[in-house]
Each structure stands twice: as C-alpha cells, then as structure tokens.
Image 1 (cartoon, rainbow, N blue to C red):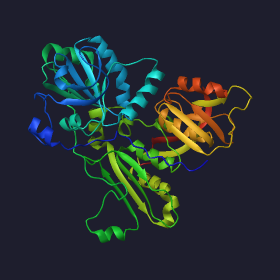
Image 2 (cartoon, one colour; image 1 turned 45 degrees about the vertical axis):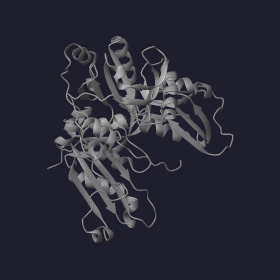
Image 3 (spheres, helix red, strand yellow; image 1 turned 30 degrees about the vertical axis):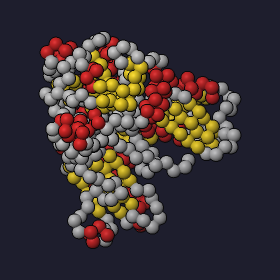
Image 4 (cartoon, rainbow, N blue to C red; image 1 turned 135 degrees about the horizontal axis):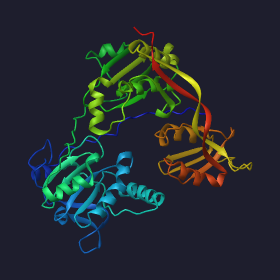
Length: 450
C-alpha cells in the first residue's frame, strides 16, 4: 500500500472576519458586530439560492426587511461541517412545523457551485428535498456576526431585533415557541474565542530568541490547553536527513494516545480503542459544543510537541509513546490483535468485477462518493475506517482477499453502510457485520503506577 498521510483535525475549522466600513456604519461597532438586543439594519442580500419572494417567485436577491413578520434564524454553515449537515433535516422539519412563523436562512462564504454540488448529492441520497434557502459567497452577514466556529445560529425576532446567538443544541421547537410567544429563550449564548495566530509549519512553542530555534536539536513539551488555539494534530513526513516534528493542540488524552500508537500511515478511531479503566472521563468525553470546551479546559486537554533530530526521525512515534508512559503512568497502553465485531468487506460472488483496466492512478473522495482507478482496496478501507465510518462502533476491514489494483466508482453516502452496500452491489461486494481480527489500542489502568 502506498503511503497515506492523514491529518486529524478534532475541531471544526474556525472562521474570522473583520467588519467592513458599511457594516461598521450600520452597527456602530467594529469589534463585536451586532449584539443581542440590537436591531438589524435593512441590508441587501445578494446570492440567494432556492429562495422565493413573498409572491412565491424565485429570486436571487432580497432585503433583510422582507423577512420581518417571521422569526428568522440565520444558520452559518459550510459543506465540510458535519454538525451543520446534520442540522439540515432538523431545520427543515422545524420550518414546516412552524409554517409561516419561522424562516431559516443558511449562510455560507462558499460559492454557488460548491453549495449546489453538495445539495444535489445530499438530497439525492436523502431521498427528499429541503425548503431552506442558502445565501452563498457571503461576507456581509459573516461580518455582522463574527464567529470562530460552526454551526453558528443567530435568532432575529419578527420585528428585526436580534434575540439570541446560539449553537445547534438550542435549535429546538420549545425554544422557537418560547421566542415567538415571549420574545426570549432560555439558551446559553454561544461563546466565541479570539483566535491566536498559528502557523503549523513552525514549532508551536517558539522561543523569542531566533537563534534558539535555528539551533534546536531535540525538544519534548507538554502544556495544558491554550485559549484561542485551534484544536488539531499534525506531523511532518519522514524525510531522510531532516528533523521530524509532531504537534498536538488542545486535544484530550485519548487523542494523544491514539495518534502516538497509530503512527504515520493509519488512524485509530474510537472504535479501535478499548478503554479498560475505572474512570473514562479523564481520557475522553462525549460532550459537544460549549460543554466539551469547558470539559477540555478543565484540565482534560493538552498541547504536546516533539521535535527530534534526523537520526531519531524513524523512532518519533515510539518516543511519543514513551513520553506518554512517563507523563501519565496511571495508564498502560499497547496494541493488541483482538476478535471484534467489524464491518467486513466481503465478496458475494466469485466473479471478479474489480480488476483495473490499467488507466492512470486516480483517487477522488468526499462524503457522497468514492472514485478510484488503478489503486488498491486499502485506500477505500482506510478512508471509511478513519473518517466516514469512524463514528460507528465497528472497525472496517477488508475480507475480500483481493490484493491487486482495482477500479471502483461508488455513488453513495460514505457515512452509511446501507448506502455503501447499494453502490457495492454492482461489484458483487458487501459490508457484513461479523467477527474479525483487528488491531486495537488497549488502554487500561496501570496497577503498578505509584
């Protein structure tokens, strides 16, 4: 299998915008944008998709005042944001439930081509359509409501006054009903953090003296979470004669163990980690949004960086494992082969429908499709196991026994085994849930720890 480099990012990409002169004049502040309790200026929205005006005619522009008389909820989103995508069916259902009283407007900086391509695939695979207009290529509303994470929801009452700014957890029928009846909801305000400048091509903890960095040979460092730093993980590729670096930013302890034991060419999702400890809350959390942020910054999150000289580059992940063992001796971590329930890619017939025709090697993948020519099945398995099916309880393994190069084209929701199996049927392939040996990261309490 060819080398595959995977960067694991454990938080959504953050967006920051500065206020334009037009917005500053309308709002009267260049720092916070429009605040809760302030009225909205009547701005022109240009670049609307799937929008109908009050007369029911398709339109690409509108005045914000056109939405008065309804509760307007601005949904700041992006096509790559999984929580944003999960909100689309919920918003559509709520809009139908509060017919005539509620209007969602999805707002994105992305282009019409990107959004149309995404929605075409999404609606086809969901077997339904959605009546939520999208504002594309936006910078005005993003400037009016600066935010550092997605999803981001702004609630504007029927009179055009901002009443709430929340995350997705607050978007419920009860809160909508409360705002329509009382012009207020009991939901926490979504907290935004000013992002620190960060260049991942440079060491995380840069000394003030440039000569120090230029002569640095080895460094291993661990800190708690740093406010304003995006969560993430990065490592440099192993290049002969060059130093190597691993950087983890604002991650829980289980993510540090996972990255250390996964190494360079694989990942270990939650379904490949066995926690055999009395207290799992110190290692990971299922909380989301603000609750997860609070948990992470309450002593459960870390920044870690390791820089090693060229001669130690091949051993960098072993050195990280040793660091974790020294720093957290209460845990014992190791890789073990175990029989587990897995999604096993299985042949349903003896006929070979996979062998490549010998075309130019090519791989293209997104949430709604996978195209591969003249490459091995390992690429499909890694993508599904590491990303698209990583939230399922079961690892993904290849049970076909096919080691040659293949051509494969799947029009499917890669996060759905049912959708994948429908697309795989033409190749006489199917994912079957059954026992299979799989390499697991086993983390247990260390009884020998002092």
